[in-house]
Each structure stands twice: as structure tokens, then as C-alpha cells.
Image (cartoon, rainbow, N blue to C red; front, side):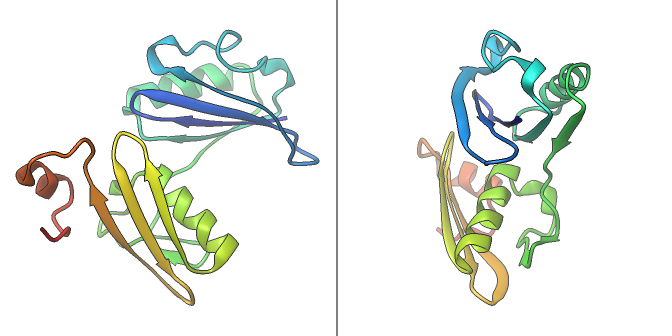
Length: 160
């Protein structure tokens, strides 16, 4: 079994996937402060590998990875990179693009060639990947609506 774990700023989501058939066996979510293996996620004894994407604080990710590595043989953490799978990250500093958005753009590009990936989490984001021109454009809209100075601080390239 593969445990996919998406650690957000306020909520963690998971799914347990059969490694051979890719069938989703179960899924769930939990509050970050309440997350406990065995109580909020599947029994780690059946998990062969864990794949993590996290936009939470570095300390949260480090603690989670350390805990999981004691129980699971393979723990993989996704990171935003300059380029992957034919898609070029539009940020000058690739790590500033949230890994959740990066994974969404990569998946959409692989499935459809060109895509518009919309993510509605603590912010609404829209990322565009052009077919055969792997340079994503992007738009960041803070949610709930923040004032113009805060929007500019988070995304200086976003026009007002």
C-alpha cells in the first residue's frame, strides 16, 4: 500500500492506494494539531511507501517525516523544482511555488498536455501550463480577500 499525505497549513489529507492496482482503498483528513498515526490515518503496518507534499511549516514536515521513517521503509517528500516532466517553473525561486500547486500543474500537464490547475485551499490559486510550451503562467488570489498590499507581498508579479 502507498500512503499519499498532503499536509496543508490547517488540514492534512491522505489516501491509501493499492501499489499494484492503483485502487484508492480509503481516504480521509484531519486537523494538523490532531494528526496521529493509527488514530487519523491508516495502520502504518500495511504501508510500504509514503509520498508527502507539504506546505506546512518546515518543523511540521520534519517531525512527520521522522515519525514515518521509524515505521515505513520508503518515505518520499515532493519539492518544487525549476523543471520537471517537461514543465518549467515560472518562479525565479522555484521553492516559492507551493508544492501542492507544482504537483497539480505537473499532473495536469501529464494528463492533458496543456492545463489550468485550480486549487481552493487557504487561498484560491490558478496555474496555467501551455501545451508544447512548458512555461506555466500563474495567478495568485489570496482568500479570503486581502488588501492590495498583502496581495502584492505574496505575489509581486500579479497585476492589480
